[in-house]
Length: 219
Length: 219
DNA sequence: CAGCTCATGTTAATGGCTTTTACATTAGCC
DNA sequence: GGCTAATGTAAAAGCCATTAACATGAGCTG
Image (cartoon, rainbow over all chains, first blue to last red; front, top):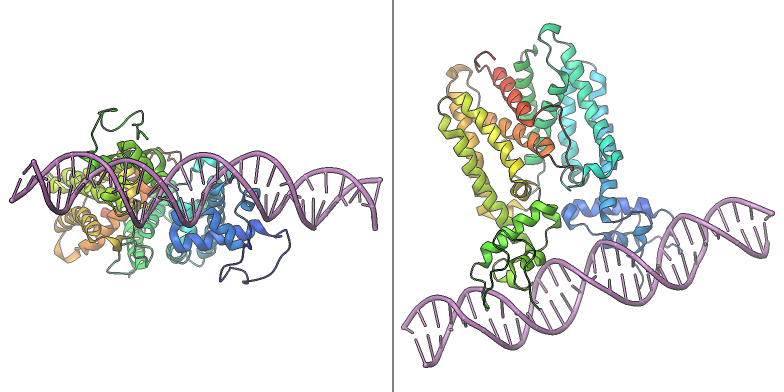
């Protein structure tokens, strides 16, 4: 017996507790995040998360329908953080949209690199988007930050040659996501690059904007 | 007893066989592909592939060290097919590099859409690239097609303003991969788009090339 | 504070999967 | 024909997901 703690938790190691955990849902989310970070979304198991939280293997079922629902909740939380991070980087285009867009791109890659567990839960775990409207909405809100950025960038262009902002947002998103997915993590599982992913993305966006007719300052 | 066939195989349903299968490795690869297509790389199980091939659950271990190695072999084969498909579409830039590049992009997306099992094994299954030099090489060969295309495109530009071809190849790859990953499959698991993924990619590449200073014909 | 009730945990069990070990069969080769 | 290595099978251990029946105690109600 003794669902003894593992060596280390996101929380302290051995806080004793009574019959009830008190904050199991949160503890499971944290354990899942840690385990996904260590072994990928596939390697993560419900039972181990329970062990990690110091409860029996059946306890998690009181908080999540099944393993997939826990995974979906991790992804949901990931999208929320992602939105926050992106919004902070974009900062409404201050002081200048182009500089802000550059920050936005870097923030995108940094998130993928520093939060690989969230990132893979969000984009690579194969969670059916249809299964949870909340998940889809959270993703949409994160994308809305990119959309807002595209809008402000496009607004700087003369109306006659202004491109569709949705298209611009999708292009920037796709390029960022492509770079993050293919090269974004120092991971042995990924390819490495003869340059920093950040540089690659920055250059790509600059070329793209130039192609739109956006007058970028020399440099 | 009776590792009876499932309803349907890639092969005929009930060809009887003796003690030895005769072509188990191939059958397992096919079964894996089919199962991944149905339930994603995570849902696929070694045991079910064995059942599908009509052998005992231990038989596959004569051909693959473990489940992951089978997955890696699927990915390997996927990269080989991918290279073939891309090379055929590019056709060495004939009759004209820009048109060929457009075909290349469409072929990329078509592969992701029509061979989702291969595509996810290749890019989303979390196979450690380091584990298999062959796998990495196969991926590199597929990428080489894109690289060759970038080269020919760049060669059309005046040397003075010619961009680094590796960078161009990486941008095109990333944009293609980003679009394929995010929107590439009619999948309920993915987001849908107000336009065809092909159009999005084509437009993105055109804008990008214009940004490079590549003179695209009007249109 | 007593008692009730419901949320939250535990136990125990079922069934699947992965992987290993010991054994069986047979294809290919001399 | 007979040997050997390759290829399958059987059986078993250990883990996981999931469920049903039961236990605990937190929080409300009076």
